[in-house]
Amino acid sequence: MSELAVKEWLKQAVKQDGIDKYLIDGKDFIDELKITETLKSNAKPDKKQARDILQKSLRIERLEPAETAALLHVTDPELWEEMYATGLEVKRKVYDNRIVFFAPLYCSNLCVNNCAYCGFRLENQGENRRILSIDEVKHEAEAVISEGHKRMIVVYGEHVSSDADYMAETIKAIYTVKKSARHGEGSIRRVNINAAPMSIADLKKLGDVGIGTYQVFHETYHKPTYASVHPEDTIKGNFRWRLYALHRAMEAGIDDLAIGALFGLYDWRFEIMGLLYHAIDMERQFGIGPHTISFPRMMPAAGSYLSTHSKYLVNDSDFKKLVTVLRLSVPYTGLIITARESAQLRREIIQVGCTQTDASTKIGIGGYTEALKALNGFKRDDQDKSKQQFLLGDTRSLDEVIRELAEMGMITSFCTAGYRCGRTGDKIMGLLQSCTEAKFCKLNAVLTFREYLDDYASPETKVVGEKLIQKEIEEIRNIPFFKKGNLLRNFEDYYHQTVQGKRDVYI
Image (tube, helix red, strand yellow):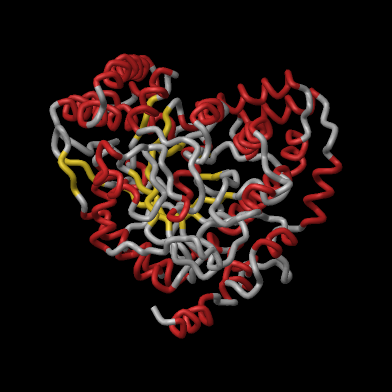
């Protein structure tokens, strides 16, 4: 791609009308003075106040900024233990005891931006630049499927070579890939993307090819910090173009959306408030909030001094607290913990209310195929800094993580039923807030876990998994909700079909 072509693309990338229409009296929804004052004025909550707020979370009602700020300032260790336990209780009410798995696929590390914390940034001369061809994307998908994955989130750098047309082609390609398993064949049933902000016209192209969730992380909601790490002569330097990326997606007909912040760029309490205000504005303008929230911590990235020396790097103790407050503040949303974190910390964080995670993760461009080619010579903890955006903390296989969760009493789910049954947007929000979706999640988790145990699980994982799946079935048979109508009968019929080798049956 010529330098001239890149420059021409840059000129038309930002559409000002895709910002202005969402402003209120010319202002966006991030008011730094208001956030700072709310944090300051709620800095000394008493126990009764905090416990009253926890009861609101348990009613699956989103917290207001002042209530969230109060929880962020709890100092009593005993009260924090109550908050951790309440976070898990909220999660179980809304999502039951299942953990959804996905695999990230990095298609390109070409990027026109120059973010101070990122290994993909334009000025990082040590980065080995590459964009996958469509055939290579298919090979990567095949390798991911061979592990047992059914969901994928595809990641792209911001560049004309990986524009909306390229994204659409990669999504279509991934959906075509089939890979033989012990019984039948596996496939990716849900393709989500983590990509740069786009125009409504480009987003419609992605909707047309069956995009799942559209995920955009704002990185930091603190405007001076945002400006300092994102040069103003880059697309990403435009704070508001990124801030309203998901608003444009809603207008384009994509109603399953995900927000996130990169913790370590600025004060973590401020970022929690920014995420909350983001959810509130989505609710105000479209009637629904984000389906998931992510909270990646800044990790060492090749060529980035900031990634290891920021004064706002978040320690493990505060990380657990921020995840807990997110769970309590926006109780209906899914929370994603990734392989950025160590295995030990992921175990702990999952138990305060997370709903999704990844495993067998390779974030180098072409990393899954290269791992297969290397066979026994490949070490899972080998990470090439010149090919990755950052370093991973947990490089265990999918099977290992599934077995660990089963031992903890949590069932792995590869379910994509809700999206294909139309349970997205305002429909899924209503079901989540009423704690009804958890019931369907439980049934479909058992069906997809049965598939995994029969098609991919190691002998050790299957032993643990069989005990768990029988426990889940007994619970289902004894819960009054499932005895209504034909729901239990249909589930048992679908379970029998799955045992017999039929795949992708869901409720």
